[in-house]
Image 1 (cartoon, one colour):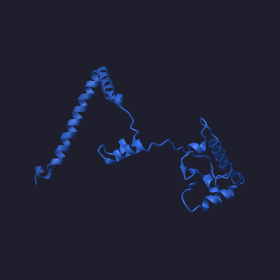
Image 2 (cartoon, rainbow, N blue to C red):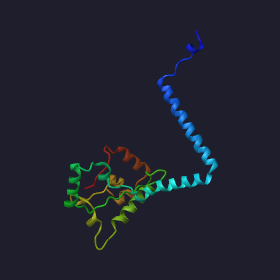
Image 3 (cartoon, one colour):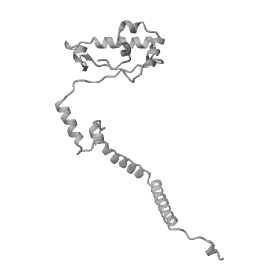
Image 4 (tube, rainbow, N blue to C red):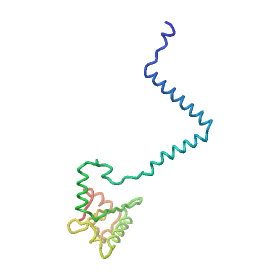
Length: 180
């Protein structure tokens, strides 16, 4: 066998790969030589390119409207959402208080939550109280709080021990309580 027969012919993909790799190597070699020969021009070209790309940020904004983010423009849900907003406007805003401590199931934390709730419910805005401004289910204000396990009863809550709190939390058979 001659040496030419022993040498394997390059496949089509190998030839394409070699062509691309050689082309990229040659291109970046020339770019490197030009940059080395004219560094200030390379710096100015790079800076101009970065500025040109940054011009697009002038029109950048972060979309926060959920309908624009997730619902197609021609979807009927957009019309339904607009109708509900126009005909059934809400004057309520949901607020959530998260307690943070090493252990939130202690009498100290539960009493602090009760103190906050009592202060919050005592707020009077232009003659309107908590009972005037809250979202209602039936005749009572809607709340969603751990204090509801004791019906927000100050006398009971102030006497709780850590064992009482843990026992009550572990005995609940449903996910959350709604008082109405």
